[in-house]
Image (tube, rainbow, N blue to C red; front, side, top):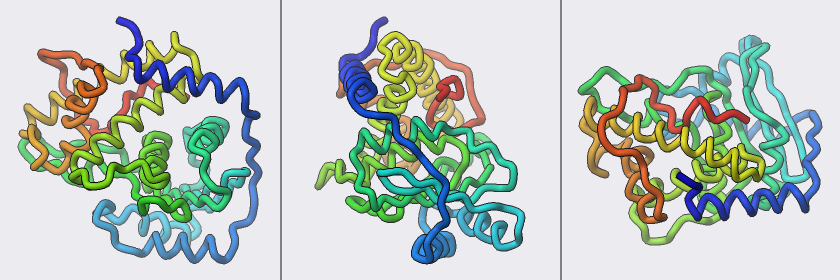
Length: 272
């Protein structure tokens, strides 16, 4: 069916980035005292999005010796990761480097990643879908000194979403629900673009998988949980994407769809 024009533009810009900019080199380093203080602050700070306290759980696991702290540094900043021992982070550091490069973040950028293994799962049908079922990160707009990710699952997509906030792309005056719908929509388009490494053919295949997944999740939320308007919390990240995509001239499937119990935003078939 062809690639949407806005996604095609993203992919071509990423292709240019790959052609004209060198690959980013990462190295392992010791976290500074400031890093540790910020990591602890974020871990113990109660946040409206992290209702299950995934951050605190990972911090306590680190203190108990059952998790490890990894500090990876490149010219665009650093990533501090708390992960369970021997956990595969399931990301591409090369891709993360390209994403940071593409967003042109300052070298002081700090990403605090609490890689909690809990998957995004929907509650039983009829139960409200809240932050504990969908959220996985947060940041202060226009600041990159403490971008927080607190799930292992979908960390790359969350990274892009939070970078969009951190790099001041939010439309001032837009209601929070519409702003998040716009941010999440673009995060997924950028994710497809970066996972295609600038290949239009691969991007088209990945987007087809993603548009079908969006439809499957949206159908499940609408039918099983009554998520149909922006008054429902999870709508801003999920069903509201349809209107935002339509605004960009991008269509989604219509009609019936199979159900899912997963509340992840992106298809598992999008590989790095």
